[in-house]
Every structure is written in structure tokens, then in C-alpha cells.
Image (tube, rainbow over all chains, first blue to last red; front, side, top):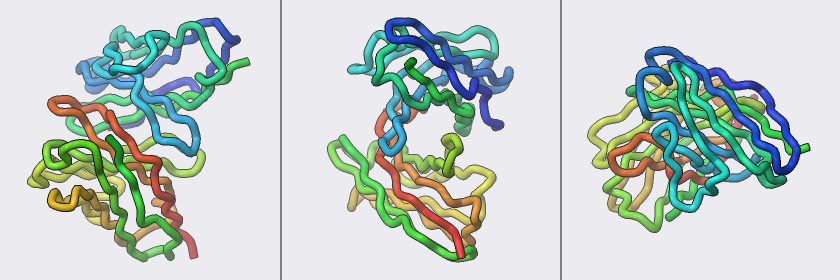
Length: 108
Length: 118
């Protein structure tokens, strides 16, 4: 699988909402439900935020939500906070895993 | 529930290294395990996976034939043997598990750095 396409950077002010897109093809994002999202603070372990397109693991803030339309999945962060400043990756599973190119979120 | 990677270091091109991942807090033998890497300044890349009993293994095209994933369920440990290393294999290598009956990565380690350089 090829890497999924994400914007290199997204920024927002505290309290705002931002959305990160993840674009694939009919044979990955568009075809299956196994899209997940990860938050990664450099030097730390990545953390799963969303799985199966829109499900949230126990303990993950409901400020994080996921959706999908056609070949594009999206992660929305509501009520942006300083600690949300990190790198974010989407991932699609179709026999193997393909990660997105990554998006750096900056809180202004 | 945690996983802890070790074994990274500096190795010359063409050299070999074995990474380990010690698991604790869960029944290791019930879960598929994965290796994911991140080259400096780059994004995440899935490297390899192994089923719960080790019967089946899978590799990214970029490492197929050079890397070998294995596990010892009696020691709760996952391994990744890296051979014929290239500069482009320089990365932080993360160990991860997936939950039962799903394909996402629910537990990650903090990674171990492999640097391939002369």
C-alpha cells in the first residue's frame, strides 16, 4: 500500500476545532472500515485516538472524533488545547498497514 | 499493560542487529504483535507483523528478505532480526500490539533507535 495523504500542518487557537484529512484510494480508506488515528508527541509512545473510522478507545477524550466520506477519512479535534500540539497519523489496514504522511498540529 | 523495546544502537551498513520487545501486563501469547518504525523527520511506517502463535509473519516490501520477526511466548518477548542494514533503515523502531479481532495498534512502546552509519 502507498502512504495515505495528510496535510503537513494544521493550526488553531485554543478552544477552536480543527480537522485533519487523510486521503487514500478505493482499495484502502474507501473500501474498508479499519481506519485508525494516532497522536504522537516526539520522544513518546504513539497513542491511539480513533479506531474503526469513528470509535474511541476507553480513556480517550471525546474532543477527538473520526469520520469518513468516500476515500477521505477525517479526525476532528474540538476545544483545542495546548497539549494537543503533536503529530497525528491516520492508518488504514487492508491485509497490511499503511500510515498517513503525518500532520503537525500547532496550537497558536 | 506495556511493551519495552531494547537492542538499538549504531551499526555499519551491511551489519546486523536484533531488537527485543518485552511485554507485560497482558497475556502475550494471545495477541498479534507488530513492529513500526519512524525515520528521522519522517512518518510512521509499518515494518512487520506476527500472529499470536508465531505461525504467520508479514513484512513490508522495503524489509522483506532482510528482516525476520519472531516471538518467544514463554518469555513474553518479541524480536526483530535486522540484517543487511542500509542507511535508510535508520529509524526509531516501535513495538506494538493489536487488540483481539481488530487491526489497530492499541499499545505502543517508546521505541529503540537504530542508526546505520559508517
